[in-house]
Amino acid sequence: MPTQEEKLDRLVDLAEEFLIEHILLQLDPNRPPRIDYNQLDILLGWARDLIEWADYKESFSFKLEQVPKRGKVLQEDNFKKAAQWFDKFIDENFSDGRQAMILRQNREMVKNLQTLIHRGTIEKLAAAQRQNGSFAGCVNGSQRHGENNCHCRRFSIRELKGKITIGGTKLRIHEGSNNLGAGAFGNVEHAFNPRENKCFALKQSYSDVETSAVERELDVLQYFNTLPLQLRNHIIKLHEWKMAHNTMYFLLELGGNTLMEYYRQKIVEIYGENYRYGLRVDERLLINILKGAAQALQQFHQHGIHLDVKENNFLIALNENQSEPAPAPESTETIPVKLIDFNDSVIHSKGHVAHTQLMRTEIKAPELRHNILSNKADVWSFGVMALSIFHNDNYVERAAGNLVADILQEYREDEDYNGPLDQVIKACIRENLDARPTMDIVVRF
Image (cartoon, rainbow, N blue to C red; front, side):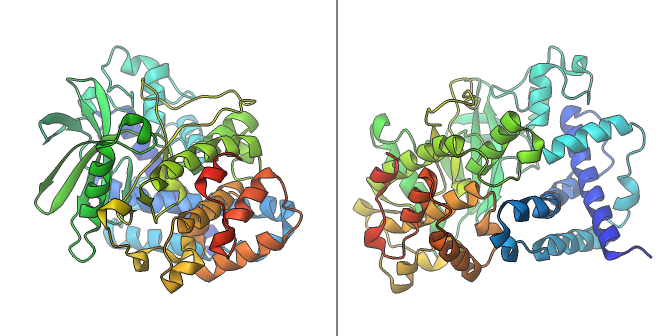
């Protein structure tokens, strides 16, 4: 009878096998799948959560060695919960999954792919392989030689079999895959306009009558489209939209990685894989990234309050080739960032009503409990976000609201944390909203 630890380890291995199957299908769409596409797509979210928690669990000793005080917040509960959810889903919906997913034909390929999974390159692997010919010995480069790709090179044209028209723009999409993300109201897919040779993000949101959150996002996006470019260049651009069958389709400018994803990616590139989950690894790099996010929020504050400031609502801005910036390690240049997701936002001139009761407790400023609304609430959330990235610990996803409050209080009182970025973060998370800086001040740190 396997022990609990052995069972958890086997579940992590199985989750990796599902992600490997996903990668192989991206690299070679003509390869006969061993899993139904719909089942695979559903399983990917569970698999990613489980692997993320497994990596996080393995980093406990490293984190405790660096900052012993934080031991009380490094719990295994969420890892075990993710394992239980994944295990239950497998048993109820895909009972033969364990046998079907055991890869034995090419262990070297599996080893390489598992390494890439832990480097957070799951979604980028196919695009990198097509661009460079081969990647870590996984697939022969000639397999893609001469094949046409979309502009950002994420997909080959033949993979984009789905078709949709938004406001007169004919697009091709990768069907059955929420490949850019998902949220409370829908999902986001990659879309390609062959005529313009340009890639977009296609956000599909299901209309919510109670809060009108989807309609609010459309109102905000359309408002910013009326402004001169220099007043909205840090806000994601809406190109087209349509409503069909109670679903709102937003055709948006394509963005890059989220702040945490980009930071971790650069840490691995500069310092190596062992530092991917390290704390306070590169303050200068993170300052460059956070300055870009601060500029975006500063620009939004000229017109309203965002009310959902967290790291995955900022995307790295892409260049004209639709690729991310690649600054030198010693660079002090600000990384350009775009602000997204405006379901909860308010524009002052529009007279929008704020639905603060829907905000996540973990990022909610204390004054909002008393219905005191100002852009200083976003500053508080920005501080929580910055601390989460600096300490490589996503408090919004991993901790309950009360635990986040305890973490912030402990951090504020710790005089050992007194570097330049610490001073800005501590200023942003002051209990007294009048003592917090504006984003105009934050962008100058």
